[in-house]
Image (cartoon, rainbow, N blue to C red; front, side, top):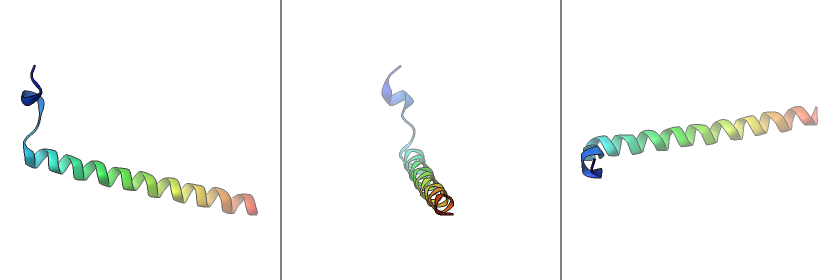
Length: 44
């Protein structure tokens, strides 16, 4: 199988890239929130 056969259309790849970025940002925000909650609980 060639890579060209596996590669999606430009529109699909762009949409996939945007989806990956959104997921990455969501994960980062989630981690930051968890860290802040953990730190606030330790202070109490």
